[in-house]
Amino acid sequence: MKIFIRIAFLGQSFIGTQKQKKGLTIQSVFEEALSNIYNEKIKVTISSRLDSKVNALDFALTFITENKTISLDHLKYYLRRYLSQDIFIKDVRVISDDFSPRYSCLYKEYIYLIQNQKDKNPLLNQFTFTPIKVLDEKKLNEALICFKGEHDFREFATPESKEEKTILTIDDVLLTSQGSLTILSFKARSFLRYQVRFMVGACIRYATNRLTIKEIKDMLAGKTVKYQKLKAEPQGLILKHIYYPEIDIK
Image 1: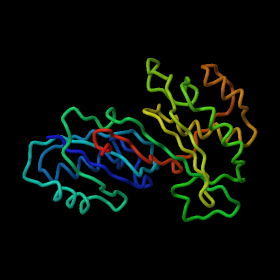
Image 2: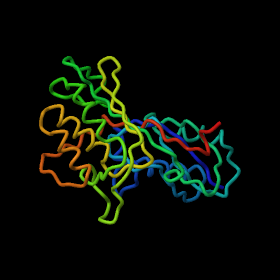
Image 3: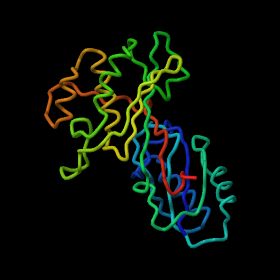
Image 4: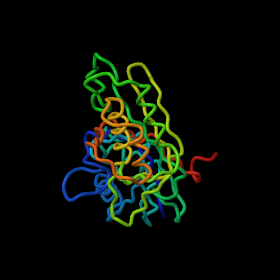
């Protein structure tokens, strides 16, 4: 029996989502919690590998067990009691055996929050980036729209290996404003490691006159451009939604 768990979490308490030798991760705390609940060793499969301090409004994991004595309602109850308040359990359900939390999604949507005002609100610091000076939203958007479509994102990521495919498609990008926040949105089926943070970094570099649109387009065409890369701070990044046709189509 494969069980699907959907969560949201605050990333400040974790060094990422993938299990590591030391430190709390989403995978490690769920494996510990589930192993104690079921009194057997449980291995968890996660939907995405997120960096330390990155937040998620939507995140998924699955595990397999033959123990059917614990109902889904009780499992949700036990998890909410066992886990820290930095994790919220949104949904627990039995899923098909061939479902993958990583590969069964149609798309993922990330947003990046910039506290774009002179007077900073410290209460927003744990999930926003706060630039020294207010950034020009028009210039941010000019850079942002360059990333829509199919491009070679090797210069805007850290590929896992030389063989990893770096030509990907960004389905949509969008800049919106909500009060003091400037929000950059990215929608695609998959992303490379650090890709969103490097794309945001390039937008910031352009907005501060340290990069040109031509240089961004040259890099997206596979050319190497010498400039001081910026990997945007992790706490501003939020995994907003993972769309699973098997679950989300009603």
